[in-house]
Every structure is written in C-alpha cells, then in structure tokens.
Image 1 (cartoon, one colour):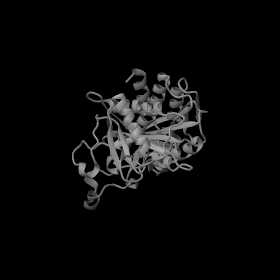
Image 2 (image 1 turned 180 degrees about the horizontal axis):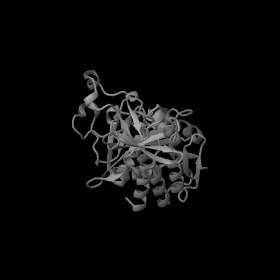
Image 3 (image 1 turned 90 degrees about the vertical axis):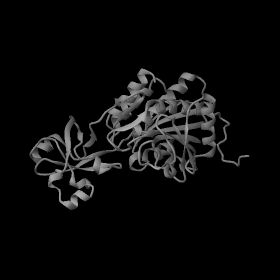
Image 4 (image 1 turned 180 degrees about the vertical axis):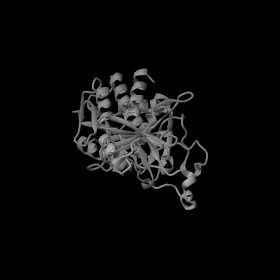
Length: 359
C-alpha cells in the first residue's frame, strides 16, 4: 500500500464519526478525492459523492459507509456523571472500564465508562451482563453544573482506541467498520483514474455513505439521487478464523486470504460473475461469502432503489467486529480496492446486467 494511501486510511479510522456525526470524516474524504474526481458533491443527507464521468449514460455506484458505532450523551446527574445511549450495535460487556472521548464543541474531553465494582455487585447482577443504563461516563467533575459547562446533551462519544500495526500486515483500530470501506471506494476511484482505461460512456460514483449503522439510510438516498444501473457495496465480514466459530454454520472466511465476494439473493448473479472474472484476469485473491437473503450492508438498500439495481457486495474479513479493537489484514483492503477497480474497468455502455439462465 502506498504511504499516502496508508496515511489516509489511518486518518479515516482515527477520526470520530458515529452515525449522524460524520462531518469530519466527510471533509477528509472530500479533500482526498478532489484532485482525483471530475466532481465531488455532498448531498443534504451528508453522503459525499466523488465521480469520474458523472454525465455518462452507464453509472456505477461504489458505496462504503463512513459512520461507526459510538455513543451519545443524553443525561447528566447531580454528581456530574454522564449517561449515554448507544449508536449502532454494542456488546455492553465490552464497555465497562473503557476510556472514551466525549467530542464537544470545544474539543474532545477524556472520560471513563464506569460501573459498580465487581465486589459491590449482587449475586444476581453478577449473572447478567450490564444494561446500558447501568453504566455512566466519568469525566472527573463532581457537579451537574461543572459537567454542563463542558458537555452538551447530544455530544457524541467514541472509544479511545486508534490505529495500530500488529505483526506483519495485520492492524487494529476502533473504526475499521466501515471506514476501511470508505477508504476502499476512494482507493478504487484513484486506481481507475490512474489507469486511464475507464470507458468514457461509464461513470463511476464513489460514495462515502452516512448512517449505515442505524438502518442503511445514506445508501438509500444516495442511490436514489445517482440512479445507477449497477453498484458495489463494500463492508466488513465476520472472520471465523478464531476459536469457537463453527465453519459448518457460518462458512469459511479467513483474515489474509483476500476480500470476499458475496453470492446470494442480495447480489446480482451477473455482477458476482463479473467480479470473479475480474479477479481471475488480474490474478487477485478472493473468497466467496454466501448469504441466503438480505444483508445488513448498504447493498441491501441499493438493490431495491427505484426500479432496482444490479448490486455486488464485497467485503474484508474482520475479527472482533463492533469492539474497540477490530483486526484485519491491510493486504485484504488493498486487494479489495484493486478488484473493485478492475470490475469497473470491464464495464461498458452496452454492458447488460439483466439476470439470465446460464449454461
């Protein structure tokens, strides 16, 4: 991976962007794509759309959501402790004792998620995982008045975990889900531009979408506005190369074995075949991910846009999803961007994505 590309990925995952609070990552995306794209626009929902050949009759939408899970402050008690609601899906057992940033209008404030110490829990409390309302954020003040001078209701919160390289090409970060997807669509657009081989009658729209973690909301509005014939959504997959995950139940997806290509009802069979053809032509690794129905990805919203869209879904295997320390392989990210670009370069104005029987 180029140094500039890696720097961009690191900046993306380190920058806070809980659903509904994506503005800072959106600005990074605009700055990165401005020298590459023919146009960069931001819609009223907050999606950032970078396009090459935006007026072309054949339109491809690439979607990677830029929001992450987090928290939002909703109550301050008389002792200055902050109570919060979750943004996106969380495991409360991972929250206790975590350091967090409360992102205020005047900058981040450090805090700690607190709970009664284990010595003070009743036997019944020890048997169950904590509810979110059992937890609070301690920023070190002792009165409501002091806390309210620093923090406003509605301020977002993220864990204090940032990018760190592990052994080899593995890395960990708080927000790989799915700012690595935002990076991939941006990197794919860069590769397409640098290739000089995109059909002039094909437009590629690389979209950093908002609010995926709370209902695939940004992809729905962006797809309606672009009205593409074909698209690819990229998100993280559950890697199952760790103990206790049954392959016969979930299939086989390993970190470091290449990006995934989804096959199933939520993916166009034509797009699936074309992605695999691109992988073989470019000698790029891939893994097949099988899903029987809809997925929890932007591809779900894209597929049913307007009169329908031919959608492919790609992914990167990820360990410890929706935790403060997600783990993936940087080479899987790079190969995913290359494969996405290779697919786009195969599309022409006459490409037909209508499903038909094979053989």
